[in-house]
Image 1 (cartoon, one colour):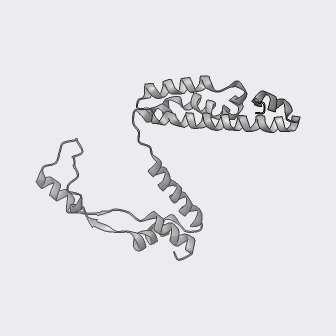
Image 2: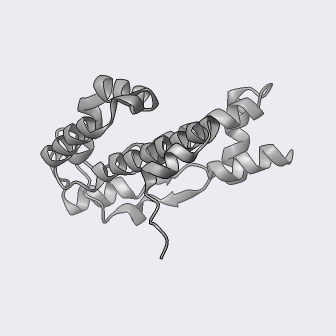
Image 3: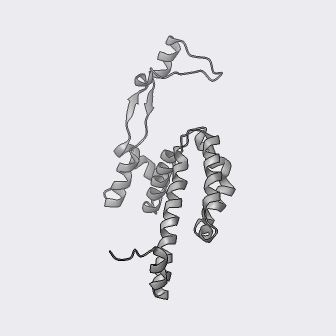
Length: 179
C-alpha cells in the first residue's frame, strides 16, 4: 500500500497560484456556511433566543471574513431593535410594500396622465362595488369604540362600499398599452 498523503503535504505541493485559488475557495465556502448560519437565526422561537444566537454567530465569524459581512454588521448595529422585533410580532408590511411598488410603477408608466383621469379610468374599467352587507360578519365599532347593535350594524352595512381596483390589472393594461 502506498503512503497516505495528508492535506498538509498536498498544500505544500501546490504552486503558489493554486494555493491562492484553494484559499479563496475555502474562504468562499466558509462565508457561505456563515451566511446560512446567520439565516438560521430566523428559526429561533423567541427574541432572546435569536439575540443569543446572533451574539454567538458574531463570535464565530473569523476576522479575515469580517469584510464580507461588514454591511451586515452595520445593518444589525443600526437596526437591531427593529430586526429583533420580528420575534415579538412575526408580521411584516411586505404586502403593503408590494402594493406601493406597483403603484409607483403605474405612476411611472402613466406619465402624462393626470391622477384624476388615471383614477377614473381605473375605477371604471377595474373597480367594483359590493354591498357592504357582505361585510356584516366583521366587528363594526362606533367612533367611540362601542360595539354596534345589530340594527346599527345593518344600517351601516346597507351602503355600497368600494373595494377598490385590481392594481395588477391596471398595471398590465398600462404595460400593454390598452389603457
